[in-house]
Image (cartoon, rainbow, N blue to C red; front, side):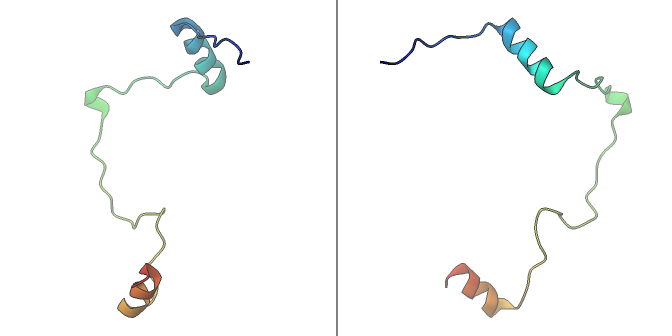
Length: 61
């Protein structure tokens, strides 16, 4: 048999988030915001290796 599902209240969820993640940083006002510009390559993607034929082989074509 399955156990009954217990649901938390919004206040209990808020407390659990606070315990897990701590205090949120202060909010940045619109006057303090600055536009971000990307100038470097993306760190989450490696540099491409090889030429076009190698890319086709890696893609399975």
